[in-house]
Length: 307
Image 1 (cartoon, one colour):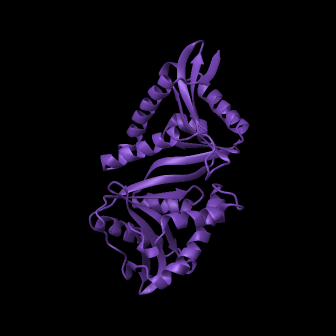
Image 2: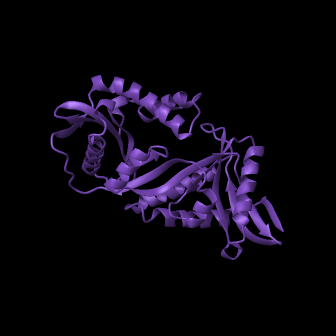
Image 3: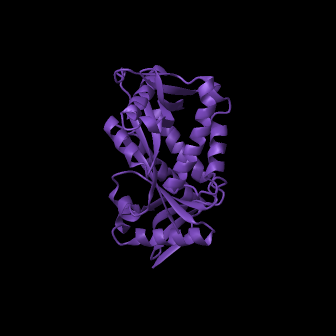
């Protein structure tokens, strides 16, 4: 007989300590700076701890604690979404179909709480996660690469800092493009994507081109502007992050997307960071193939399904 109840305080702390250990094992092979691993663990654990509507549940089988399930509540930026932070079963209780039952329970619980979608974050190559959540649409994935000390650009391709005259038109176009990407990926509805995009850009670039830690580059081919890349240096210890990369439609299919990423890698090394990270939408298979070919590795995938 399976019983699911709210975990006690000591049980929650015991689960949280074990979850932290498992998260550290996930991130340790991906980041060169141990402080980045610690930051990513803290991001997950802190987010779960501060989730006011979330709960940690203990799973009992015939009176014996078999595992834990952590389910998130509604958040201001994602009121329609509930997150399954973690689902863990002790080894002796695996292989019995319990995880599927618990996932179904989490979906029902999310719907009963007013949620419209259940989201999960999984590590690639995990057979258990693939069995449980492989059918959930891939919304996005986090990828990271250790950049080389020297980066060579294609012939006649250069990069230079974006000018003030370029910034305004770039920002307007990028805000619209990001909203369209969120809708295409299924991450946001058409009704609120643009509002969310405007809010994110205002938060990330409060001082425009002068925002500390951010650099925006124009990609030039034979002195013609063909694309852009936007970076945040020190996003994590030792890691820069790509917030946006774009090639003008008239110049796509000519390798300029790859050139933009190489400019980003060169800027990352110049800023003193050893790695470059990015988040790519799940529907953007062209970009995924590019990043794969450049040597980026998947750290984790974000999947969700309507309940």
